[in-house]
Image 1 (cartoon, protein in one colour):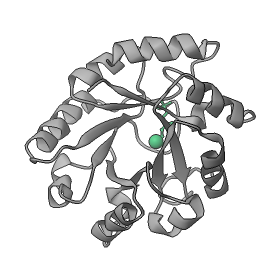
Image 2 (spheres, rainbow, N blue to C red):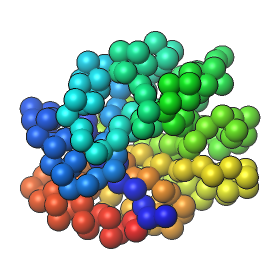
Image 3 (cartoon, rainbow, N blue to C red):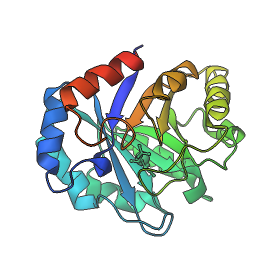
Length: 222
Ligand code: DX5
Ligand code: ZN
């Protein structure tokens, strides 16, 4: 399976989001990465629920890859109109008591359930959930803001998570989120990443032609 791009909308031109979505949709990009932050799990607020819901009326082919950096993430699912075709990622660290129930709620809505793990969280925490998920988001930066540096040891962590997923007996995707740069994305692919959140260190670098940038990144992670 070829590498899947998921450009991060919070890194796009926030004054022209509909145009940014349409450009990617027309280029045949498979997913758009939509970060929702509650200013509590992380000290930032980005795309809100109304905007995430409104993307459904704009997207023709592209699917939503929704990343909730929020406590009690299930409280936002109705407002975002979570449904068929969506990937919904919730943080292990943000659901200490009810992660299995939150994952089941995502699947009940017809969406794919992913667990996101922050840099300081060990891959082994996933062991209790492998039958309840469709994939994992490995954060290779400390979450909350674009433009952060990659955390040392991230490549080894990607390889360790890949091994854990492959040994599970389930067909599980691994998404990498954070500093997916031109220089590092091919190495992330070699470590076993399937999906790539392309943000400020690649597709949304200033002055790039998006068509050329998408073609270049697709080649690097094929
Ligand atoms: C950060 C978000 C990412 C962010 C990545 O917490 O989860 O999706 O957009 O941006 P870069 O590519 O700049 O690290
Ligand atoms: Zn994200």
